[in-house]
Image (cartoon, rainbow, N blue to C red):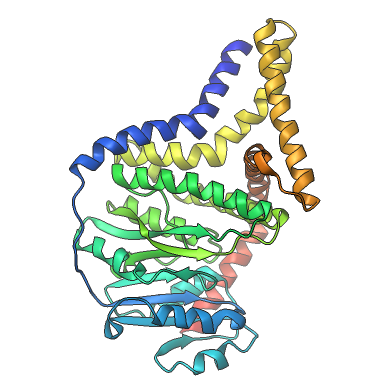
Length: 392
């Protein structure tokens, strides 16, 4: 039984982090042969929304970046929402009369700000982008051209991490290269399994108001559109560039938040796991997201004690495998020490980032459990009610 469990766990871990990538790479190569071409020119009216909380120091640069986008100015509306901000964001935006500025003194969170902003959107398409990102000039045009296809409900751009030479920046950049590869494959096969909030667009008619406590607003919104039967397309030629986390500890905090959001999202997107409704979507979602956010990190943690037991009773092979596991985690620990002592992690970056991201899943799960206690749920409901009342 221990042998069976060990090899089963090892197979699932390998599939999650490598096998799935091989499967979708081969599948996508076949799918691309029948892929429809996008419209060369499709220029509908669109609203670009930028949620900004106390971002006055970068607002001017963000507005100018949006105004420089290669898209007809009369068809592109800019909307900034700064609910809860206590800096001089209003004064900065007042210098741009063409920018729609929404502001309430009470802060209710990003999801509620997005819900409120959507009440002011009259265009058939909407784009969300973060305030700290820089968009490439063709971003809007590349996103919107996909909507000539009526089966497309949302289009996600690519997140690019600006390199600053730090370990956190290198790790985040490495992760996003891998993630972008999977996104391209998922999109070519059927649909993207979750959009990047740094740059994502939707058909306005498909937007569903988010719960006040939603952590991964971009992921939940896009996956609900997938559940409705539409495709979410990945467009790597539309990209948002942003700086990396300030430090490895800050990156870890961000990952813990994302993993908590992953657990929350999985609890709200259970119908996507029904293979009878959309079998391909269920396969992609389970393989790309659910395994990575739930089962696989737990199995990875169990492999080590299982390997210890087997190495004592089943010969040299398991002793070698145990040695490799210990070496891997030892290299991760050495990478952490170097990174926290202002030294480059170098090749140690791979085991370090891999280990930290799996630890983040457990911490994110604990955060999700704490936030879903009755008291926390009641508080979220009160925030939702108060935000709706103030907005009206």
